[in-house]
Amino acid sequence: MKILHISDTHGCHHELVLRSSLSAKDIDDTDILITHTPTFGILDFDDNINYGSEELLGRIAVLQPRLHLEF
Image (tube, rainbow, N blue to C red; front, top):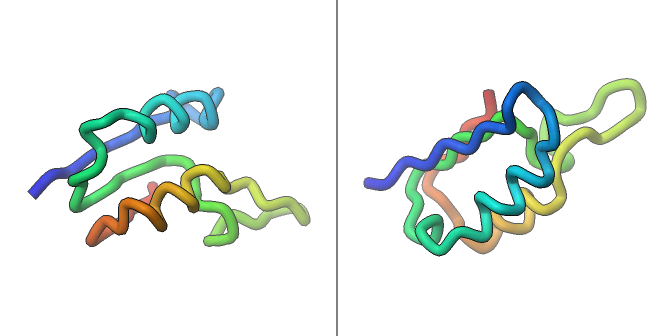
């Protein structure tokens, strides 16, 4: 079982960190994905803004990890 944790360093530059982390070759066989950044459209709405990542949403659809945790 492979667990991957992607941290965006306290909310700063989360798209840049996600882009580089999600494009890594060793992510393909991930069973459990843990991120700080929310997935676009899933518990990311506040002040009439979606704060989640569309890139993360698309990558999760391709990877299909058994579990994705956002903290």
